Amino acid sequence: MLIALIHLRLKELSRKHNIEKAKKLIKQAKDKGAKLVVLPSMFPSGNIFEIYDNDKKLRSYVKNLAEKIPGNNTDILINLAMDGEVHIIVGPILEQAGPKIFLTSLILSPQGEIIGKYRKAVLSEKDIKLGISAGKEPVNVVLDKKYGIIAEDDIFSPEISRLLALGGSDIIIGTMKALGKRQQVIKHIAIARTIENEIPYLIVGESIEDEEGEIIGYSPTFVTSPDNLISKEAEEDDSILLVESSVLMSGNKQLQLTYLEPVINGLCKGIKKIKGESKRKSSQDINVEEE
Image 1 (cartoon, rainbow, N blue to C red):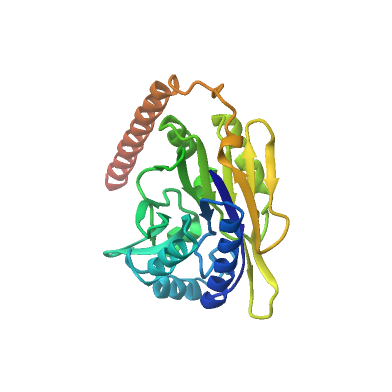
Image 2: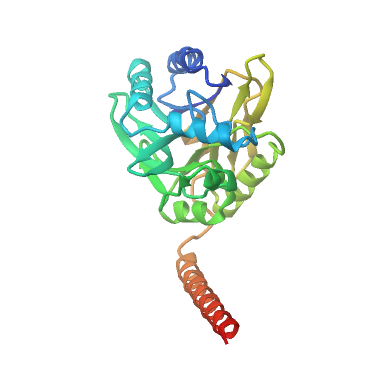
């Protein structure tokens, strides 16, 4: 399957402008034979969480954009998939689910169906400050191959990638929010995850521009593979990075993952034990203070 990673230069909060650009690029990708298109974080508005320190402004941003799925944002994305006649992976977008707000990635079919949904599991400090809730488990979606889905800060957690690998992921697809600094670190982290799990990573970043057209945040769009490490990278804004899924597959995975299950189970028991000891210590400290 030919996959198109679309690196967009998103104008801050200019949804209509950003959607029109995406439509053109999706059509170009389809004309080149792409069957799956990956769009950036918080499309069509762009993720500005790590760009601004004004929490009041960001809370207003979250409140205004969060909505139920399906909703207006979902309808826009579904129309893009149907008009482009392609599968689309997009997100995360802000999902309102009862009193909670999640950062949720969607997998859409060319027929306009939501065939998969993943709620970001690893939250940043800024996400937590803004009242975002964490998802509970990784998600794989089966198209021509089994794709593991990650979002933004998930890539910093080796555990998420390892669980996806244990679940049989052939390729991992993720997005990265725009960052104000240390953008190139993302590539090094993705290379580490690739080496650890012997799985290619397809990461879609984004550029964010302000009202004056100045870039205020950026993250790279690139592909890693166990053989070539960084095998491809988008070199300009509003561009399409094409990759054939079959080419990324190196045949047999050299890393045997089955032995890791007892290790992970042991670590989970260890964490529970540490938590229990910490609670007992806290309780003893309180009793000492009361005496």
